[in-house]
Length: 284
Image (tube, rainbow, N blue to C red; front, side, top):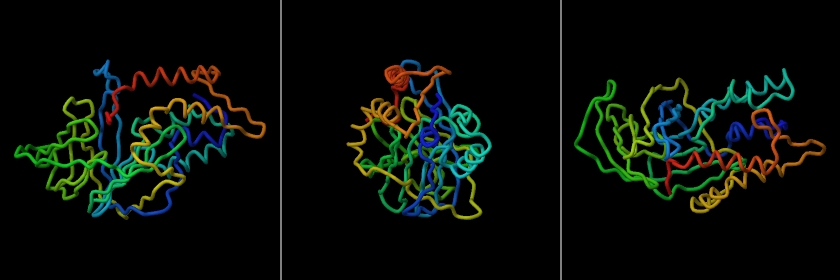
């Protein structure tokens, strides 16, 4: 899809890559996971893979997708290309710089308490809420070797799914992918009971300098309950946000596969896409 308007292009592709401001979360490690998942419950063999990132430290951790992890490089590259070529298409921008993701969410985790703050995107909006459900772990006696690490089994429940985690006390970081944390060692593998979502550790890197993360700007404070109500209207929210934007004399043109589409056509396209994404990681 191409949206011929510069001021909304960056928002649309990168889920607002504005530099963070406000409270700082200090992290000392970059941890990468591969997550394999099935978005369509009617076609579970059709799986998607992507790399997600956990930046973590002694007291705080932040979970994010590739685009957030590399936001400074992406934004700098985008600005350089815009200087060289006016009217850069979002299609080439997406293909060459950013990566498509189905994890448009950030978790800011306090590793010393149960506090988890969630930043989640809908259309052109970002919402902030306190995570009301914190996974509680049940340690198991089972152990195995994962790569070079001795790991132990644990179980929990979160947002409608039962999970198994394998954590390593040899990596004394009480953190893990997505919302999960609080075990006496880093989570190196995590999957739900149906194996619809499966996280595997790719790498652990100690940063040369601690990295600071802050909440994005222009957040809408809410509760998770209210956010889920907004999510039920996500398609209409995106359509109205996009087609409702008006410039002085700039017409917003939306094209799909090189063809301009109307508001009604775009709404139908979004509905068709959503039908194939009926198996979210959070069931409720």
